[in-house]
Image 1 (cartoon, one colour):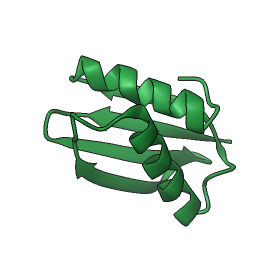
Image 2 (cartoon, one colour):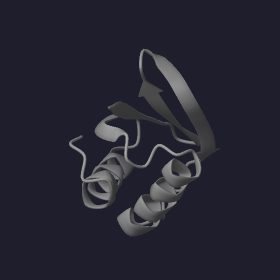
Image 3 (tube, rainbow, N blue to C red):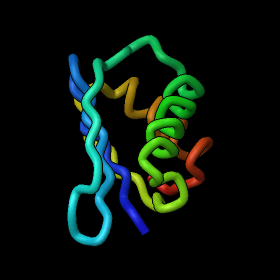
Length: 85
């Protein structure tokens, strides 16, 4: 089982998969303040699918300095990954 971690900053967001005691994959993207939970959810699922992590993620952790995006990302993960945040 893997942890999907988010570090949401004002300009960049880093997403990583922690599995078996190490970071298996990391992505860095521009923080988009105007994306919806659905847009983020679909995007995150596609990243996980591409890396063959889609069925491994069972937990999510979010660190954020952008409160509005914290709520959006939480909603995206709960809806599309069915994982507790």
